[in-house]
Length: 74
Image (cartoon, rainbow, N blue to C red):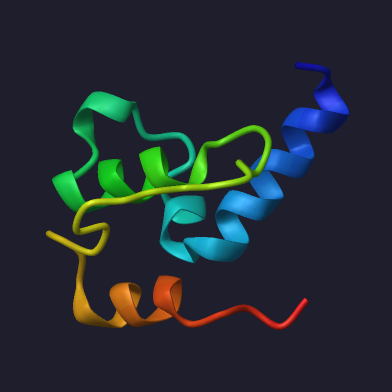
């Protein structure tokens, strides 16, 4: 992945999950389970044509679950 592409992916991740930006320098193994789940959900390089998730909001704070389940205005 090129540097510009990486920046675009990170920008998208931080737009979806602003709290991860605060933890950008934190090692992955030290993130909470909820933050790890957010990171795994957001780190897809290219949007898939079809994404099937089983309980994607399990373990997330209610506010974050609402944020990711509400369609964004693009």
